[in-house]
Length: 457
Length: 34
Image (cartoon, rainbow over all chains, first blue to last red; front, side):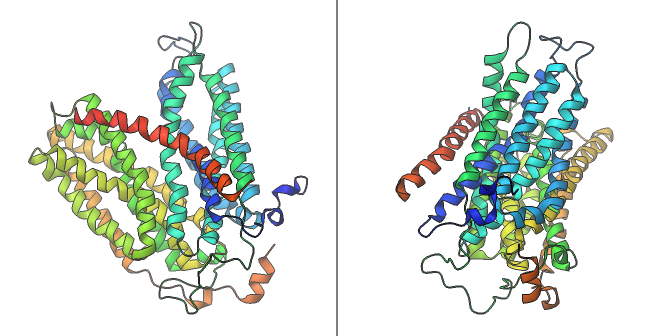
């Protein structure tokens, strides 16, 4: 981006004395915006009444049409993060955050046009494709920068940013509802105006992040920090080139570790409300179930910071061992909480499960840093996000299919989830096994000094 | 502007909306215990 020199990596090197604690808020500026994707469903119902206003008219969009908007967005997130990871890494965080701001905010503005002219394809293009690029680029943009600023606590640093992604829906959901209530009139539901407002707000918010962000000077170190002279058993001091990482068993083992952890969590996430009501009929009402979902979201967000920070002390491999071992016990225990009728035990089990679901997302960038070094960690993280896309298909499909099969075979609703939970527990056992196979990356994959010089922009 | 002021402004910029969202969600979550 030579026409905008301030975006250049060379213009983002921090001056002496620049506080590293300014970088997490810069990252949060991006993640608190793009995490809105988790709250997109608040628009679904109003968008089925754009013509009919009070109820759906024959020409209004169906919920099934609208479901594709989110799916396309998440698909493009994974694809763009995988394809553009190297560009993000080599171009620096400011260029990536700036581009993500344009894509994410622009996606909303294009979608507003789609809503205004009532053309779903424009919305697919706007939110799904353009916004999806904003999601993918924005998600990975601060990762390696945070790790460079916090070599002493990389888990905590990336955990803070990824916590923002989990918490964004808390802001976006009530904000969207409030904006629609302000813009709606007797003749329209106010979705287009809400999209325009949110698009502009998000664009500005993310731009602020891109202005704040800096990369440390090459010789910078945190005060009092001494880099280990010898690599630890599972923490390398070398770097692996982004595409070389794909040739290592470690990348694919971590891919499965993430995929299985997310599959188990995402599978029950969408069913949490229905599951709580059907397992405790008459005791958990619709309103209480909605409170339960909110509480689980808080644990999902808190777990991102807590577990990623803990991983700096426990080690990344041990942290995932905890997720898989404890997760297996808790998933297997959920049917028992239903059998004894203990809502408290059910809620506690789920709270820990969801904290570990979020923790799995937040700990993985530091795991990749430990395995493949700091140089291409953002780009390798981008490639790994395809595991999330796959889990997004596996998890809900598995849960829905197993439940439908049980109900069709006469299993009472209250027990229809039991098999699901046992299957999820088995997935976590497989994850445990994958994690146990992870060893340090073979030296033959490390970049040589000449290769490092060649690829440095 | 001092480093301390920059830090305060940057954290307030992201912290206030996040805290507002968390409080809203926590209030809604209390429905589970009623």
